[in-house]
Length: 300
Image (cartoon, rainbow, N blue to C red; front, side, top):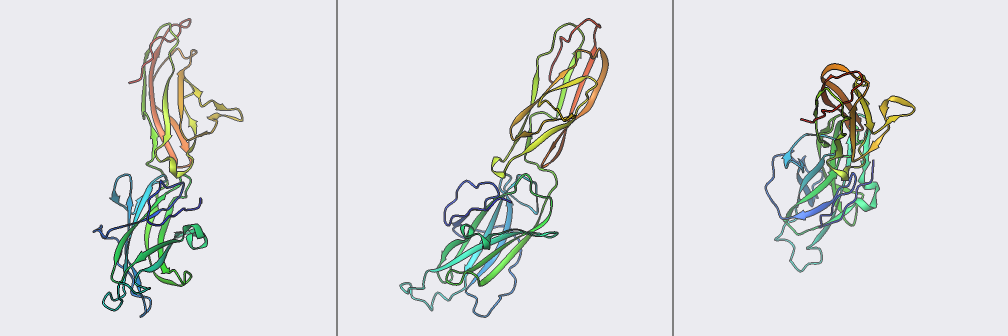
């Protein structure tokens, strides 16, 4: 799992698997999960609420696809009595540290921010003050599907190993990503009946979220009876699949010159990625002379 990167009070473009925290004025957010009981009578700061949102769709969700950008909004409140501390007192502005972890319900901790000094983020609050802190995390394309929780912890800056309060949200990562771009899910080569060689058209494959790491993929099935796979080329060690491609590239399919007859409808081209499998349907009606070549090639 790549390291998460944080920076207090600013929003940066998040890197792979990165989490970035920024302070905002208090705002109303959707209901997420009630805070657990105070963990001590001397509690000075509390996480009020944690809300997980799909940043691309701006919707609160509990299930996210690989490649998603999750925006987690953390509402934090300083519990000190504002009437008991003068504004010019040295401890009026209290410094706290936020840390976080991503934990699998099957295999345990996937990332522990407390062990990464670069991920420990300092925030300032005044007595009675509140704020919403935004955390951005790009779910890597190769992240395992399953049940997880996102745990946020807050501690005092002068005792960072003593957790004042914590709150967590359960979520799920689906086996198949919604963030893989495929330019066409259906190809029709049209009627192929005379003498011209067809031009080559293509299908574009690309990650929707480049900040979620590499999207690796192969073509693992195509109707080889009547189509040649031109790009990416077949793997020399296993010609039933293509060589591996990384991130943005194209698929080029061409009707075989040796295919003379056949009405092929909705046959499968399968693209297997590290974020799930995707099927493209291809069709073509071939009826030509044995000594002829293809002349009619169209995409509809």
